Length: 102
Image (cartoon, rainbow, N blue to C red; front, side, top):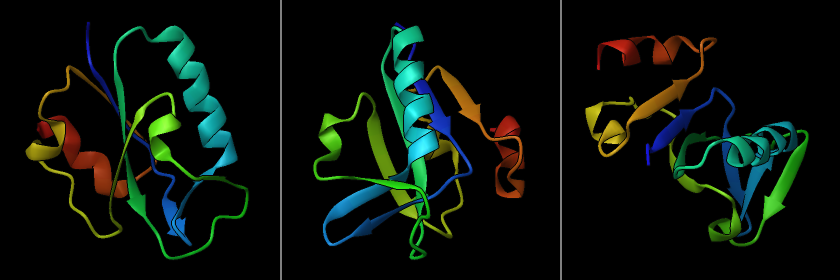
């Protein structure tokens, strides 16, 4: 099965040991899980700014996808794409425009 990597422009944060994700993003990823049969990995930048419409998760391993958090200033590179077949990146984020060249 093809492995999907999703790199959205929305951030995440960890507060008090809980991972906080935007509720709308999480709803969309739950839908993606119903239509994508292979493994899904999500790469999110971590922000210190509290999210407005957040859903707090005690244990990220219970999510229907693998979650990878990277620092806010992380430059996504070829290493981040290793082992994936398809990348679904955000089209509204200037710091992801280079992904097509990888």
